[in-house]
Structures are given as C-alpha cells and as structure tokens.
Amino acid sequence: EIVLTQSPGTLSLSPGERATLSCRASQSVSSNYLAWYQQKPGQAPRLLIYGASSRATGIPDRFSGSGSGTDFTLTISRLEPEDFAVYYCQQYGSSPRTFGPGTKVDIK
Amino acid sequence: QVQLQESGPGLVKPSETLSLTCTVSGGSISTYYWSWVRQPPGKGLEWIGYVYYSGSTNYNPSLKSRVTISVDTSKNQFSLRLSSVTTADTAVYYCARPLTYRSSSDAFDIWGRGTMVSVSS
Image 1 (cartoon, rainbow over the protein chains, first blue to last red):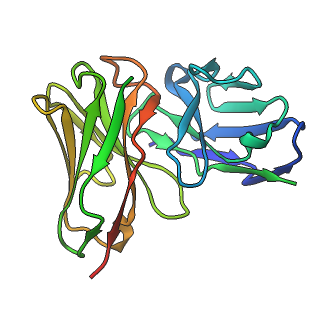
Image 2 (cartoon, rainbow over the protein chains, first blue to last red):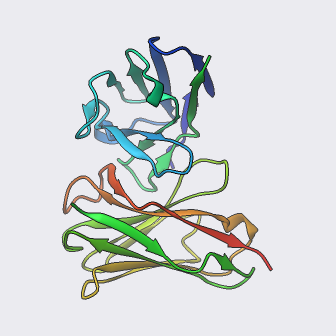
C-alpha cells in the first residue's frame, strides 16, 4: 500500500498570499496518477487536479499541480476567501487507492 | 448532469451489518467503476472499494473480509454492505464516480453528498 504524507498539517495564510502544499508518497506513484481534492466543512471533496497537473473542469487557474514519482505539489497562486479549506492528495495508480491525511489552509 | 445520492440507515448497532445504496441519476451506471469512500468524524478519507457495472469488484484489503459492493443496473444503483461493524466504522460514507468511463484507475470527479452512519447500541 502506498502511504501518502502531506505537509504542512496546517498552513495559516492571508487572502492574496501564495499557498504551497506538499504530498510525498512512500513509493513511486504509477503514471503520476495523483489527484488533489478540496473539502469544506459539511461538503464532499471536490476534485481540483488529476494526473498530477491537469486541472479538473471549472477549476480556476490559480490552482496548479506539479511533481512526479514520489513528490507532488499543489500551488494556489493567490488565495481567495473561498480557498480556505482542507486539501487532500490521493493516488489512484495502485490498489488500494489511498489518500493523504490532509492539509488545512486557514486564515491568518 | 450525473448526480449521486446515498441512502440507508443512519444508526447501526455494533456487530450488525451496515447497508447503504447509491442511486445514480442523470446518467447510466454502465461502463463506470463506482466507488465507496468513507470519512470518520474529524478525520481523513478512506477508499472502501469499487464495483464495475459488470459486477466485478476490488476492495481495500483493510476491509475486504467484511465488505461487499454490488450493482443493480436495472435500478441504476450500487450498494455497500459492511458486516460486523464496530464504533470504528462510524463515518460519513460517500459514493463516487471516476472521471473516465471504463477506467478503474482514475480520480473521482463526481461525489454524493455523503451520509452519516453512526455505530452505537
């Protein structure tokens, strides 16, 4: 099973600032099948990025994903008020599919 | 626009079987791999398993001995059964669909709203 580690656990930033979230895998993620989700309280996760760097439909271009192998990054170029949430990475290249523990982005 | 809706009891007794159904509306259940994902209160996400419209399945080894996921194409539904539940199975249970049809290896772009299931006597 691929274990995903996310850092930091919490990121305290102000609107307009840049957010950089990290996801590290215990072994190489097959075909860079790595996704990022955003989750707000009481809501289902929302797909932001798939294939490590492809934005899902309707996702603003301030969200970008990068990385390969075992190290991946989600960058939010300028935080908007609606971006404060928890972000999860997920690998879907091998079974079982696994998620990271999440990074909470909160308002400083 | 495809939508997913989970349904089932919100309270299950320890040692009993949790049963949930996900109804697919706005599209066909055919040609997709349909998953269940759960999230204990205040914690992260755990993939439970998937079922293909043909009936083939793949389960998380951590739950494999207790899980059955099945599909009913005539009703456009798929279901989750989790046996011998304990308080550790208390969670919000989501059903989810991947981006691409016929792909078992894909991100989940459509999610149900989730249903809270508590295990308690």
